Amino acid sequence: MADHRALLEDMVLALRSEFGARALYPLLRRRTRDVELKRVLERLAEDERELVERVRTLMRGLGAKPPAGRFRRRVAAWVIVAATLVFGLRFALRLCQDAESTVARWYTEYRAHFAELGDVERARVCEELAGIKRRHASWLETWVQNVPFRKR
Image (cartoon, rainbow, N blue to C red):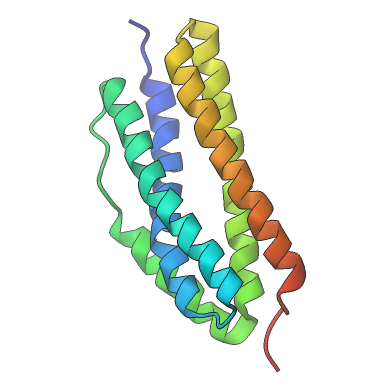
């Protein structure tokens, strides 16, 4: 069995990002009156709950003991939501879009790592995770382009 310590250290960053998204999307949902955006944020929140569990399962399969959550990520989510009072919702959506794109790239790198090792199943899981994150980034990009920077 391959030594996955370096990969697991990197995957902790992805998991922390998922914790942040899981905490942030429900809070952002409360900050908008737009019914369609509320639906999108609810879907993102649902996906994040699933993504956290899938990443934790993947990490456990590699011998890690991943955390169930991070207090700091919940605090950061509240700080970002508070910042929307000054900067508007677009600010937070742009941060989320950037984070989703970044984590999608990480999952794609993990896929390549597993494929190189011949671990087809884990490579497939990572490709699915990357696809979900790319879809999230695309949805958020649409809203970033169409939500005003801040209310006047």
